[in-house]
Image (cartoon, rainbow, N blue to C red; front, top):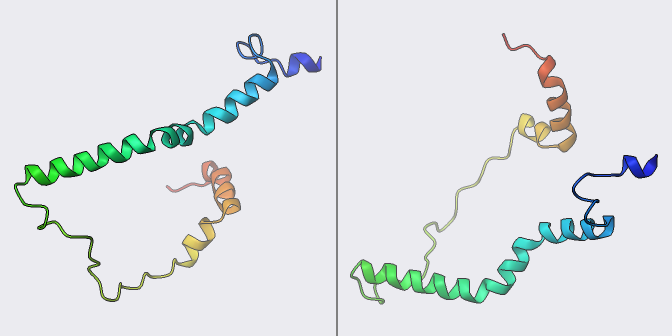
Length: 106
């Protein structure tokens, strides 16, 4: 009875549960693995694209300087209000999602 409850068709029929769990955990990390192995090529392509962008604008490399901050003192960001603080919590979002269909906004 318990084996039928854990049976997922087309998955456990071909793979064991441990193999399936390994595939699921690796698939969630696949982006990081690909970026790790391709990071050198990505950096080379990014530098090449930047050089082609500068060349297409017809300006010499000494025109393009390093990044300079525009603000001497950046402006202060306002603190979020009580409503943003309340709905920023995970339990409040869950409560709102559960109660939303029962609310009437007519």
